[in-house]
Length: 577
Ligand code: ARG
Image (cartoon, rainbow, N blue to C red; front, top):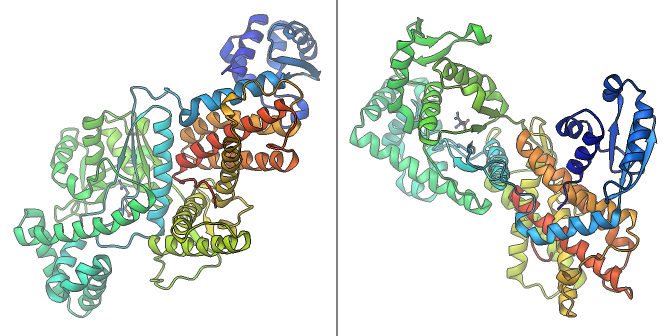
C-alpha cells in the first residue's frame, strides 16, 4: 500500500529546503473532510524562503499537481496548502491491502529484536480476584497483544502476591480453624474466612500475632510444614485464578510471584552496601531518595525481613539479566504510583537504568451505576460474578432476539454467543476510556447494541459477515472484486475507508501511549461509518457490477479490520447474534 503521507512529504521536501522527516512531522490531517485529506502549513518555510506563507502555498500547489498521481487537486487557504486525494486510487489501494493482509493488518516489524515485558494481573494468593485485578488483567492483555502485533518479543508476567507476613497469619489460622472440605470446594473463600477470623481473634489474644510471626520465620527458613501449607494455598488459589484466565483466553509466560524474589534480596542489599546507599532509620535499612523528591525507600525492616518494594527491586535485576528488556511495563493501579517511583529510583541508583526502560502504566477506579452484587464484601466485587451477570443479561437479550426473528439458533449456540458477547462487553468497558479515568459500569451502556459498546462492534462485524456469506452462497467471490472503485466513490464510502486506513496508526499510537482506548475509538468510528454506508446503499441487490464489487470489497475489508481490532483487545467476534 502506498504510504500517502510519506510520498507527499518526499515531494514537498524536494521542492523546498526542509527534510522529508520535517515535512512529515508538519503535515496535518484536517479536522473536516471539506478541507482535504492532508494539509501542509507553510509558516515554517516563510522565514527561510523569505516569502509569505501564502505565496509558498501557491507555488507548492502548482508544482505538486501532476507530480503525484494520487493527488486529485489542491487548494490554498491562507497559509495552508490543502491536499485532496484521488478517491478511486485510494479506495482500491487501501481495501486491496487490507484484504490481502488479513490477520496481519496493522502489524509491523518495528519491534524486531526488542524484548518487552508486560507485567499484569498479579492477584494475591488467598485473596479474591477483585475488580481492580480485572482491570489490570484486561488492560495488560490488550497492551501485550498490541506490542506483539508490532513485532516485539513480548512476555506476559504475573507477579503473584504470594509472600509476606500475612502468610504466617494464614498458616496459624489454618492450623486452628481450617476446614479441609471447604478448602477443597472454594479455597479462596475458606482462606478469606479464616484470615478474617484470625484478625478478630488476635484483637482479643495478642499472642496470636507472635504465633503468626513464628510461622512466617519458619516459612522463610523453608520449614517443611509451613512450606507445604503455603504451597497448598498458592496452588489452590492459582487454580481459581486460572478459571478466570481461561474464560478470558489469557495465559502467562512467567508466574514468578513475590516469593520467587525473596532469596534474591541479599544480592540487592550487598550491591546497595557496596555503593554506600543503605542508611539506618528507626532500625530499618533504607535508601534516601531526596534528589528525586521522594520519601526514603525501605529495603529491610527492623527485624531484618524484606518488604514488597525490595522484592520489586530484586525483580528488576532478575528481569534485566534474564530478558535484557527494552521495556518493562507494569500495569498496576494508580494508588501504587509512588511505590513504583521509589522502586525505579533505587534501581537507577544501582545503575539499572530503570527510569529509561521501566514504565508504570496506572489506571483509575471502577464504579458501578446500576448493579447489585450478591456477595458484596466491603468493596470487593468479584470478577467472576461480574462476568456471570453480564453473560446472563446478554443471554436474555439474544434469546429475545431469537424469538422475535424466529431464527434457527440452537440453545448451545446461543450460550456460546452470549458468553463471547458478555465477556466482550466487560473487556470493552475497561478499554473504552483513557485508563486514568474512573470507569463506571452500567448495564445499559455496556449492552447497548447501538452504542459505544462491544455488542455494537460485534453486531457490525456479524453484519459484514452475513453479507459476505450471502454473496458466497450466490457464487460471488469478494476476492474477485478488484478495482471496484473506478467510478464515483461516495462521501460515506470514502469516510469509512479513511477510517480503515487509520487502523494501523491507531495500533501504533495505542501501544506507544499504553492506551487501548485509542484503538477502541478507531473501531467505533469504523463501525459507525460502516453502518451509515450499509443503511444508505444496496450491496447485494445491485445491477451495476462495479457497485456490487465495491460494496462487497468494503464489507470484506471492514470485517477484516473489525475482527483483528477486536482480537487485539481480547474480544472474540461471533458470526451472528
Ligand atoms: N499484588 C499486588 C496487588 O494486588 C500488585 C502487584 C503489582 N506488581 C508489582 N510488581 N508490584 O495490589
